[in-house]
Image (cartoon, rainbow, N blue to C red; front, side):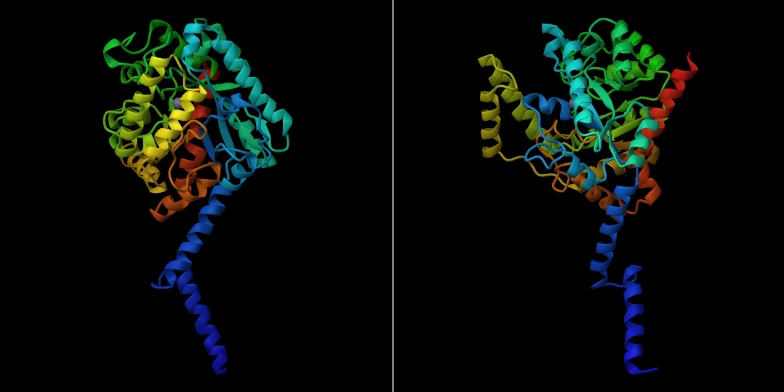
Length: 411
Ligand SMILES: [Zn+2]
């Protein structure tokens, strides 16, 4: 054998050693590159479900061409494809004020029309999904599934029959409350001392039973601790937290779940879908957001303005400029996933980004193109590919099927 042939063989052996990750130095780069590539491939191939994206509400300001990369917002077709997103639960978000002013149901219907409009306008890109099977078919066809969840039970007003109406329109989860207490139960955001029900109302209990009967997932994101406890007492099916993180990292923030409740959610077979919003991730980001939000709320009240008014938006932008958001990272999101895995197991955690619903996001997870960065971080932490698949979507799919099964079986 010639000297150059030996050199070539030695080179190949060294390269394969690097790829196998058993060399230091330059090996780290090769290793990193192959890990990124694995993450990219896994995000594309796995079933990737995000249970909370606020596109319908975002579009209230005017329609946008979602088949193109949009200049603002966290979601559009091209970026969703880049990120490997297969199913984006469209949040049918009904602001709490509708419970007082009336028109909550009508507003929810309008947002559902909007989601149907997206699928009708770009049928090669998007399709409304009403079941796990629909979702898998969409993936097989190369389309992005748009299942729907209503955020705020105020949408059903005081009529259980409206649950059937929304189920008929394709709604597959209902977030029982939002920013204030409603007819169903108490909100984690309302003042604890003046809460209306001390958990769920008698009507709220019947709502949960009817959701079990119809096959609508019960979403406990936004409810108070006492309402959470009542839901677990009543529900015959596993429940979800569509966009909540772990309170362990944001002490005192009831909107995130404490360890005991994460464990009980898991014992019932449910899943917590981690919210990517910075305020949900770290104590520093949470304190800053909560303080600026309280301050803005008081400022609006004095002037009779709401969150959507141009004056409020201007003020929030000025606040952001003078006090920039505390940065967070992909690693912070992975810490929440790790924590759930540690206390409740790998079968009970998923992702519910809150894209288009939050203003500050981790570096590397600024929009729907960023999921592969999270996958890379999980692989780096030693998660196996089957475990990453569970987090990305299989856990949620299991819960959804179970909710369907409980409905089909009846009480
Ligand atoms: Zn929310």
